[in-house]
Figure 1 (cartoon, rainbow, N blue to C red):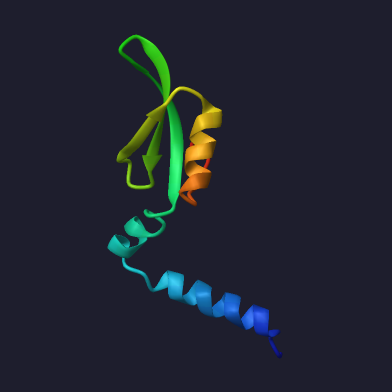
Figure 2 (figure 1 turned 90 degrees about the vertical axis):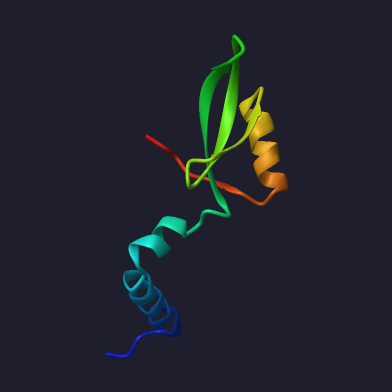
Length: 81
């Protein structure tokens, strides 16, 4: 069976991901991935943007502002359930 070049790349990448240590997986995407949670600070509702490692990065007053901040910094949101 011959794999298309794209399929070979995917197989190679998936194999590389399986070979990462737990520590490497922990830091995968930390520099680019963020999530947003609502919070109350000084009696006001704010939205806190967290890095993938759980470190709070910034608090803003609206979701729209959070999206602008993320876009300006080339960050990607991930859903958190």
